Length: 515
Image (cartoon, rainbow, N blue to C red; front, side, top):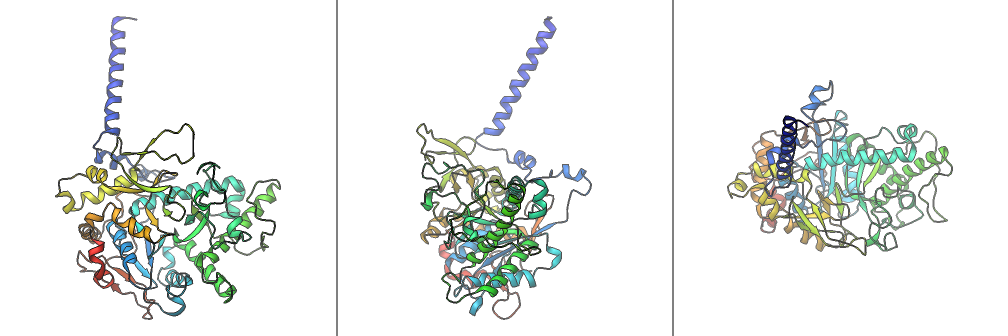
């Protein structure tokens, strides 16, 4: 090779190595370059985000709204924790559904109250032109929120995409839209590790899909062996739900109709909303199994006990309500049966990692491994940090805040959890809240969140699924920056939505709420 050619080759190799070193420094430095992450991180699923999407005719859709309901009939510490955790994570002004309701609409009397008051809200408060908005409902007495709506929205569309893939694999492309369509409009519930209430003959227990992406050793050699702790999370939990307004409205309407048509005062589980919702899901899945078997009589499908109920699916009747569950805890983590797999981790290692030394699968050659904090959560936290003056004045960067904090994580699915549903032992609620990343700064973060929405800011400055997203409800004009209250839904008999100040709901719990 001529000397000039060798010189050019060596220069090219040197430049390539230098670029690799620079990139590795960017990706794995102990202090992330946040401006670089926020400008390159595109949290949309099927379609490119800005600025690319602006070049596609019709790609950008009108702004989206998130309708956020917290169910609860009366104030207590748990409801106030849900309220504070949602406020500091910037979900906007929530609606408390069922506030001071009485009789069969009082959640203290029956779990069915949730179906009644939420159905009323969907039918009477949300107009038909909001059908393509998203709806989020959480149980106000058992739920706390770790990350904000920009994380939840991004992951909703990712989970929805995965559910589309699962349905297409089950039914084949031609049948998927016909039986389960339109795809991409799923009503996603949290996943339980046991069917409750338990009756393995019911389709809501046996006919529901097997967990995709988790093999028979996910929880070690005891997986699915009868102990709830080692079950794969396969069943519906009604305490958390997210989906398009239109589909959620249809589902709750159908559930209320089923309650009214079949309610038996002598039935053991007559007051369980989860029982009726799971029944509708089971029939949805029976219709899909029938369609699957019509195409291939030898097709594999869930099988129940010998006396399993296989309801008749009548032509022309609606069974498809787009119900799905969040198997991977991308949105919701139910805690019952999961305490061995869900824990608190500090991501202060290289690349924002934490060492996991728990041998979940019981492997003989197990080696500890690095779990990394997810980028979408980091971007959301940085945005909050950079717009909260009191945090900025401490002199600590977003990087330091993250490294000093603990985060709730599912080490099986490797997911940093946006919303924790503390089912099972009530002590979980007391353990979770003080460990939240915002606990020591909650008072300042409430004021920062209200100032953020007073400026009419969207959840994120970039499109998610080609839409810029905002909260459906605004804080009242003139509300003080320490009033992270909520709207009532009119369930108290007034039929009017009323602003409930934070002091009115949670004044007696301030000392506990603000660490």
